[in-house]
Image (cartoon, rainbow, N blue to C red; front, top):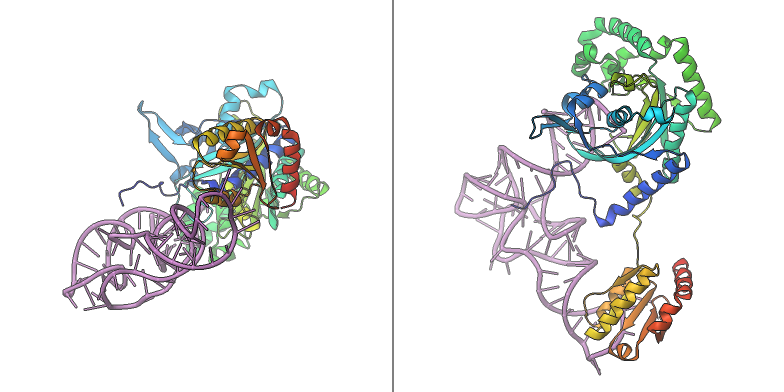
Length: 428
RNA sequence: GCGAGCGUAGCCAAGUGGUUAAGGCAGUGGAUUGUGGUUCCACCACUCGCGGGUUCGAGUCCCGUCGUUCGCCCCA
């Protein structure tokens, strides 16, 4: 076939499913609004260096998953593989920290990672996320988690698990890292190939390995939680007791190590059993070092991102896609009648009604059939007779009741029409 | 980047080496002229993702390629 198709790992979101997207976006927007988070919209591409520095050279995201290219000015450009680095860059660039001590921000849009597609994983996918910049309070961590759980709850998603861990601060982690390397090095030969590789690059990730032999070795490894200093310990304890106070269930997962370098203290992940291998629906944590690392004043921050496609995979298991049905379906035959019908439809739309207009001019039989399928409770009928009289037929499709009145009267009395429509729609 | 499965119309599919590629849904036209949800009839793939090969003959076997699915890896 010579026709052009969407690139591997990209997808068109078509009318039949777009209702899910609008549902997710509307709920997220609502929840963020109630918590006074403001939307930010950073650019889709940035200087490559921003992500390399922000996310960490050693991570897979930077090492092998970025969409990087040179533009015509020979600049190295990267399509964002996540939002956080861009949001923080904007925060620094526009001195948002000087406008208010605490910035509560949210975002949504496409991100890009060059990966092998599979269920719940694409090259262009969409994230919705939150960043709370400027507070190191445990309550900030919990606020952000609570917003995530609110969104998931309002979407009606059940059987989700919240995993929680603390990766401590930089020096906690450095000490632990050393202890872990010391522990693992004697076992080096017995680790799986990937883990051997990670021993020097990113040893904490070895804890997460699914290889059974590696798992067995890791079983007796020192625990990160034992290496937390007093500060980190206290922060983690407070996060837990606040979560409990909010009635948010969680489980401590000492092996939860977020992939990106910038995390510190709290790390969390929300997973579902109904998604196969790509089980994580929301991931996030605290990243107190990032703002400083990107050239801003040292500023604590915490945030998360959700994968919209994964949310929708779960929603599909629960409900049909919301669709917008017309309230009125308008049929007509003949040039004069069609012209009048079009005017009528236009005026009804301006009066706030959802009106679908049949363009076919086909036999009323066909048009009525489409009216029926459209789901509209009311069909307006204009033929030659009505055109001459200046009237319009009103056919209520559920009861088959049909009346006629003048077009002028109909428009005069849109309010009672609306009431009848509301009644008809509530009793389908 | 690695491993395995799959790829027939808009959708769901039968077909597994032999003349014209089942069926269903949707769509279009019709069953007396201006009225729906039922029914009936007709039409709707010169072609089986694409390219090459084996064979007298391929949707059906082989190779490649692209896509997709499921794992690994990684992450949302």
